[in-house]
Image 1 (cartoon, rainbow, N blue to C red):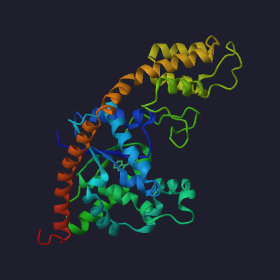
Image 2 (cartoon, rainbow, N blue to C red):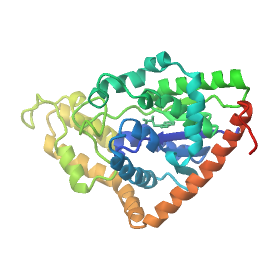
Image 3 (cartoon, rainbow, N blue to C red):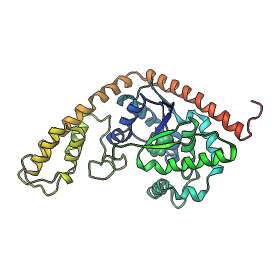
Image 4 (cartoon, rainbow, N blue to C red):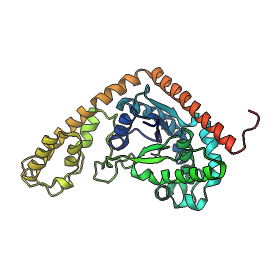
Length: 334
Ligand code: TRP
């Protein structure tokens, strides 16, 4: 097998939830056994729309590492690092910024949607940094020679933009950068407790990997169910019920079939159904909560993982930088 490098990352703007778990974390835990894996905590990218809240980013760097470790991203297999500690990424961003037009950035559908959602922060005119974060993400990817990027659908325009930058760079300066491919996660997006298509922190409809048993129970009790079900005997429609939807993720196949049938026949009350679900979610997340507690009680061990991961990542980024500078005729003296 070719020695492929994969790279993924998250903006540290909040704790990770079950949407992240089924959408990407589960995949990373598998892939780390087969590929040279880098996992980036994208604090610089997080600042592009949180520049006025550095505390939030700082605090969540810690939360995200704990999330990674708790789900089984294994620092002996995957290199976990902090973006801002790799200055080569910032340098590459500057070099690549010549290879992208403003018009092209403004056309990026993901960036476009995000800008529309952030009117309150940006007002009439978006910052240079936010508009340009796809360039910085191209630097994240290429600094490590990553060829496969496991992402959700929303990230495809960013990978496409990275590919264009790589082609342009290689055309002008010579064949140095690796053109990455997106590796679409087969699992689909997890809906929110309120039935929203997306589970998200800002939407207040998420179950976090680090939620306590009480929080999980409380959230499941608030989940949206079939509004036409007045009493237990009313025949239900599990298609429009978030509890049934989550049973599909957390409850064994046979038991899930039973949930659907009993709901449709009016043989199962919503409260009992929710209790069963929350207890299944609690059990599912228990090993993660325990692993998290282990690391929470050993902050120096977490520091060491980050320091060693970042050192390892830096070596790789420096190798790329040397080749890039040589190709760009910037290889003076040193
Ligand atoms: N933009 C990604 C997100 O919002 C996070 C990210 C930063 C990333 N750098 C990356 C993802 C490099 C893949 C590769 O989720």
